[in-house]
Each structure stands twice: as C-alpha cells, then as structure tokens.
Image 1 (cartoon, rainbow, N blue to C red):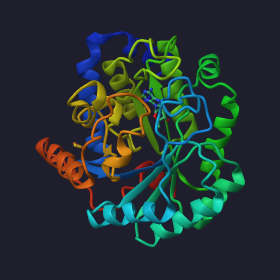
Image 2 (image 1 turned 180 degrees about the vertical axis):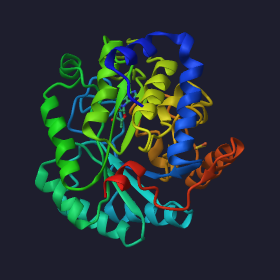
Image 3 (image 1 turned 90 degrees about the vertical axis):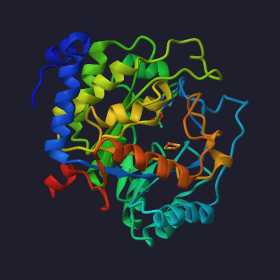
Length: 334
Ligand code: 5AD
Ligand code: FES
C-alpha cells in the first residue's frame, strides 16, 4: 500500500485507528507472506563493544557489565545444536568487538554454512571489503539497524559515529547481494512522530528485505537511565505500518516488545510480524548480553525457548516454517 508522509503521521497520531491498523497489517501479512513463522536461532557471541551508543547497556563506558567472548569453535557448537533442534537460520550477533578479526569471522561462517543453514550476521559497521569477505565466505544476510534516521537525534545518541557511514554500510550490504535487514528504535528521548514516519519511508527507499522495530527500554548503566520507556503501542504501530508499506518483507516480533508486554511477541505476530529470533545459547551468557534491562529468557535453555515459542505460535493457529525463510521481497528481486 502507498501512504504519504502526512498519512503515516496522521495514523501514528490517531489512536482511534489502532484496531483497524493492526487487523489490516495481520491480513496483509497473511496475504503476502502466509501463516508460517520463521524461527531464527540467535547466538549473542560477544558483549564486548567499542561504541558508546547512549541507550545501549553494552556501551564501552559501562564498567559494571561482566564481559564475555565465545570462542569460534563454541559458537559453531551452539549452531550445531540449534540445527539439530530444527533451526534453518542462524543469526550471529555481537557488540562491535575487534577481537573477532575477518579471519575469525570467516572461520565461523565456514563452520556454520557447512551445517546447511542460512546465516545472518549482525556485527555492526564494517568496511566494504570486510562485508565482501563475509559474503564470499557464505554469509547470506546482514542485519544493521539504522536506529533512527533523524540526523540530530542520531548524532545525540551515537557519540563519534556518523549516520552517513551507517547509510553506506546498508548500501554496501545491498550491493553485495545480501538480504538486507535494518530497523529502528521507537521512543528514544526527543524522537518525534515525524521522525518515525521518516524511518518507515527510509525502509522503503532502501528496499529492505527485513525490518526489526523495538521500543526503547532505558538501561540503568547508561546516560539515558532516567529517560522514559518507549511506548509499546507506538512501536507496534510503526511495525504494522511497515508491514502495510512493505508487504513482502520479513518482520520479527522483537524481544524488546515482549520485555514491555508479557504477550508482546504474540501480539506482534498478530499485527504484521512473521519472524521470531529465539536465543540458542546457554544461560551463562544470556543475562550478560544486557542491551536493556529485564530481557526475557535469561534463565531458559535453547530447548525451553524452542518449545515455549513453538507452543505459542501454534496456539494462534500459525505454523513453524521448515524452510530457510528467505524474504519474499528478496526473492521477488531475483
Ligand atoms: N532498548 C531497546 N533496544 C535497544 N537496542 C540497543 N539498546 C536498546 C535499548 N536500551 C537495540 C538496538 C540494536 C539492537 C541489537 O538492540 O536497536 O540495533
Ligand atoms: Fe524463551 Fe519463551 S521463548 S522462554
């Protein structure tokens, strides 16, 4: 569907239209990408980060957090276990941690691609040559949220970073033939409704294959400790509008949604989402990957999460996909 910027702003401002929006997004999801939910096995392999994003608990200036790194051979073991459980996509995510050289990442890619799964990387800003090396070694998808397209807000939230480099990363990833994942935070301090509308229009302009939207949740060990928590409904509305405007893409029901609402992922799956990314590492790492507080599933093991989310998905009449879950938007381009 086509919406002007003014129409998007009007829908975001008018809560009397929420039920219409969520029901329509659910229908568009059903009509374009079907009832299958794609599960991605998420491996948060390092919480070491060189950046200072104001909202993120992994920021380098957080001296309280207990840092960890999982060695390549153990990362591959977690992936093997996930594949045995039926996962068809593995997502590797970390802080921006230079310990993992291009060679190390390529070693991990090779090990995981030998398991016959799709592989998504979410390891931050890299050079074109690095993205190319990962792609040539077998990575299929790359996820890097733009976080916000509002230049001033981006600058305020990301010391020593440059939004134009972030745009460059996304263009490079697209040029290299990755499936492109991006997304944004909803409810950052001083973020306007207009800025959220621009984020949605950016996803379209970029031609994203996957878009993840999550509410901002203040972390006590960050400069935004006392900021207001993002609004669940507004995040859900941004997600639903993204589905209407980009009907063929993959949209995850994000963990942050469930942190704010005990049924958040299921509500998201009924409002336009078609992907869930359960954690497939063991409990020793989960609590330490504390991007924001009160993350769900920190005491569960991979099998418990798989069973829990599997049952929830079935309870709403949806099925779990048995294929790689390539985005229909991406397939349409090929
Ligand atoms: N609240 C919600 N989401 C956050 N992220 C980082 N910090 C927070 C926070 N405090 C999100 C960012 C990042 C993703 C991995 O986690 O959007 O891209
Ligand atoms: Fe982890 Fe429900 S998905 S416990």
